[in-house]
Length: 195
Image (tube, rainbow, N blue to C red; front, top):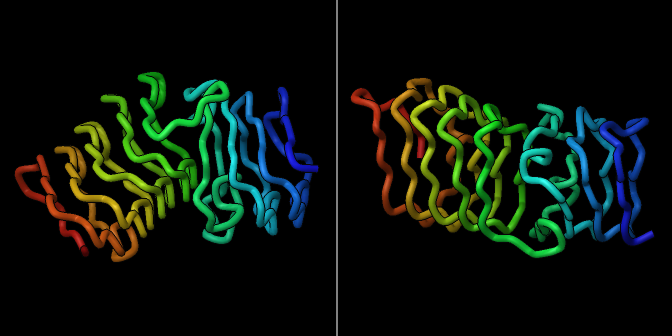
């Protein structure tokens, strides 16, 4: 089995649904994938292509907060190719209907740019970990950024942090931003950061 089309599936039946399917290279996600089990994609060492049909539905998915959880994007450490309606994308615009980005949503994806909606209030753990982002502007509405959210974004050069974020960032949130050249905080009292 090389490709799995999840069709209208919104949740996986058990913890080991695709575990150790080493020949699985692609999945097609048509609906929000809610609360997939921790190890559903564990051991899928060849999974490199994720096909979505709707950015809003993909961003409405819900993945475990567990650091060891395996969302489709975290099945292995290979760069993921993200396709929207069959076309490979490197730039994403998240719809205005999304107020919270889920955990692991773009982990290891090869997106280089993203536009986040002005009403976004939170970004989940590992959301962009080891992605290929080169710049990001966090909207003024974001108050929460999850653990290790940007860890390993080696190509990130510009980071603009919105005015609403006043919380602390832990050492993992922004760790390994090796190319960072510009950090701008729009808050009059910038939060403590650990870069």
